Amino acid sequence: MPNLEAAIAKTQERVKRMMPKSMPGTFTLVLAALLVLVAWMSVMSFVHVGKDETGQLVRIYFGADLKGGAIIATNDEKGPQAKILPPGFHFQPFLRVLYDVTMEDVVEIPSGSYGYLVAVDGQPLRPDQTYADPFAPSETAKMISEATHFLTSGGQKGPQTTVITPGNYRLNRFLWQVTPEEATDIPPGRVGVIKSNVHAKVDFGNLKTDKPADCSLTRRTRSIGGELAVPLVPVGCIGIWDKSLNPGQYYINRHVYDVTLVNTRVQAWEYRGGFTRRFYKLTVNQEGRITQEEQSIEVPVPPKAKHEAVFLKIEGWTVAQQLRALVQVTPENAPFVVASVGGIDEVEDRIIFPAVQSVIRNVLGGTIRVATTILNEDGDPILDDDGVPRMKMITRPTHVLDLIENRTALEDNVERLVRIEGEKAGIDIKEIRFLDPDLPPELLIARKREQLAEQLSKAYRAEQAAQIDRIAAEQTRATADQQDKLVDAQIEVKRSEQFAIARSNEGRGERDKLQLIAEGQKAQALVLGEDRVVELRKFEFAVGRILDFFEANPGVLEAALTNAHKFVPERVFMIGEGGGGNNLAGAAGILGDFLSGGRPPPDKPQ
Image (cartoon, rainbow, N blue to C red):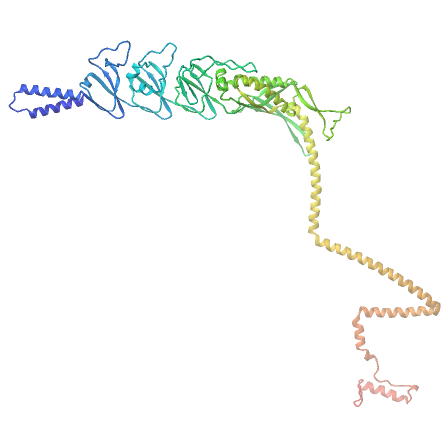
C-alpha cells in the first residue's frame, strides 16, 4: 500500500539520523528493521470509516471455516463477517492483516419509495412460503441493521416481506441486496384490491389485523341468483382479500402484495357509431316544390366510446341504437369484481356489453306496455270532466317508431333487466339512456315532407301578412312625407265644401229673391201697367249697373265727387223771357265770364 511504504521509508530515514556514525553496520540494520516492523504493525491495526460509509469485513487468516452452507460468519469464521464498522476510528491488532476491509456507502431510500430486501443468508423458507415472514414491529430495526441478530434470531434467506421506508441505512451489504421501488399510491376515487402471497400480520392503513387463524374462503349469496363464484379470503391470508384498501400512499411490498386499482366513481359507458347513416336531403325551389336526394355518411366509433352501437331487428328493419350507461363499482364490491372478472374493463367487455346487447334485443323485439286514448264508436276520443282524453294501458308488439315516441318506457325496461345482470358481477347500473337511433330514412321521409309542407304553408301565410304590413307601412311613410300637402288638400276640400254650401245658399237666396221680385213685379204691373213696369225695371237696371261699377271702382266715384263743383255753374245767366230783364244782359254776362277765364270780379267774392 502506498501509505505503508511511505511510512516505512520515513521511519528508516529517522533511524539513520538517530544512529551514531561509529555504531557497527549490522546493529544499525537490525534496529531499523525493528522500527519498520513496529510502524507497519501500527498502520495495519487501525482503520477510519467516514460518516457516510460503512466498513465491510472479510476475514482472511486465523479463523475457522464456515459450516452448514453458511455464507456470513457470526463467530469470526473466515469469510464475510456479520459485524460491520460504523463511522469513526477503529483500532484492532493486525486488523488490516486479518481482514480485508472495504468501504460501502450508506443505503439511501428516496421519498416516495421503499427498499425491497433480499437476504443472502439465513434460515431457508418453508415449503409453503414464497417470501420470508415479516419481522415483528419491535424487532424490525434490529433485524435489518444487525446481521448477527438476523442470522441468530431466525431470519430467513431470500426475498423479504418487510421493506425499509425512505431514509439512510447502514446495512451489511454481504447480507442484504436492496432495490429501491416506488411506493403504492391509491388516488381519490379509487380503491386497491390486494392479492397477497403471504399469510401474515397486516398493518396497511384501514387494513389491520393479526395473522389470521382461519383462512377459509368467503363467498357472497344474493336472492337474485346467478352470481359469479369467487375465492375471496380474509385480510392477512394468501389470496384476494375480501376488503379493499382506501385511497392513500402505502409502502407495500409489491412483490408480496399485488395491488389492483379499481375506479369507484360513477362512469359513463357509451356505445356509439360503427354504422352508415342514410338520410334524405329535402330542398325547396322558388316555386315551392319539395325535392329529395338520398345521401349517406359513415359514423365511426368515437375514441372515448366503449363499443359500437347495438344493432337491432324490429319489424324487419335494421336499427343501430346508440346508448349511454352510468355504472359504478362500490368499494365493497371491488374485491368481488377483481376476483370474478379481473377489473372493470373486463367486466364491461365480458359481462355488461353482452348483457346490454341481449337485453335490448329482447325488449325491442318483444312487447311494450303503453298508454293509449280511449275512443268511442265513432272513433273520437272520450273526454273526462276536464276535457282531457281518457287513457288506458295496453300491451302490444314493439314498433320501430317507439324508439322515438315511447323511448322512456323502453329505457325503463332495459335498465331494469341490465341492472340485474350488473349485480351478478358486482356492478351497480345507475341508469340506461338511449341516444339517437339510426332509423331507416324511408320511415321518416313522409313525416318530414308533411312537416316541411306545413311549415311552408305557414311561411307563405306569414310572408303574405308581412307584405300587407309592408304596404301599409309604406303607405303610412308616404302619407307622413306628404303630410303638408295632404293638410292643404284637406283644407281645400273643406273650403270647397263650404264654398259649395255658400253658393247653394246664395242660389237659393237669389231664387227666393227673384220669386219675390217676380211677385212684386206682377203686383206692380197690375197697378201701373206692364209698359210702366218695364220702363221702371230698365231704370233700376241702369242704376244697379252704375252702383256695381262704382263698387268695383271706388276711385272713380271719389274723383267724381272731388270734381263735382266743376260741373255746377257758379253764376247763372238768364236768357229769355223768364229772366225778368232784358235778354242781352244774360248774353253779355256769358261772354264776359268766358273772357275772364271764369274768375270772379275783384270786388265780388267767389
